Amino acid sequence: MNAGEYITATVIDNIAQVGIDDTLAFGNSSGFSLNEIATALPAAPVNTVPDAQTVLEDTLLSINGISVNDVNGNLSTVQLSVTNEALNVALSGSTTITSGANGINTLTLSGDQTGINATLTSLTYQGTLNYNGGDNLTILSTDNISATDSDSVTITVSALLRA
Ligand SMILES: [Ca+2]
Ligand SMILES: [Ca+2]
Image (tube, rainbow, N blue to C red; front, side):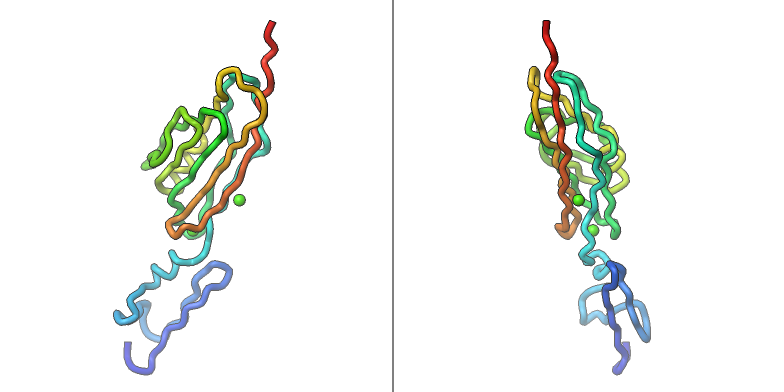
């Protein structure tokens, strides 16, 4: 840029609006780029979760309707947790489990939004053998600047009547 030229950057409704009189690049001396401004916007992920779930004791529950949207596309991880085991997912796309595991009460998915959402469609819950009562699924989504959204889904495990 030449002397006397300027750049202004403001954030309105989570959309970067850049006013500029020369070129879409900051001077090297400023040390940051428009892309870095866009990804630094405080736009947290937003979870969509289903209503409360009910399942019969010792029965597998498919949990449908969980997804995550991050308007600036930098979703990083989704942590799923319940009190009683067990959660299971089928990994999709580039998604991996980076903490916890299938078959226990918590797992953390890492990957891009498309892969994580595809993986979430496969989520199942199997309560501990002979357990009935309440449980709670928590969904904690985090993007790559640590903006988060946390939601929970109540799960009621109803008692199996035994002869
Ligand atoms: Ca974000
Ligand atoms: Ca939320």
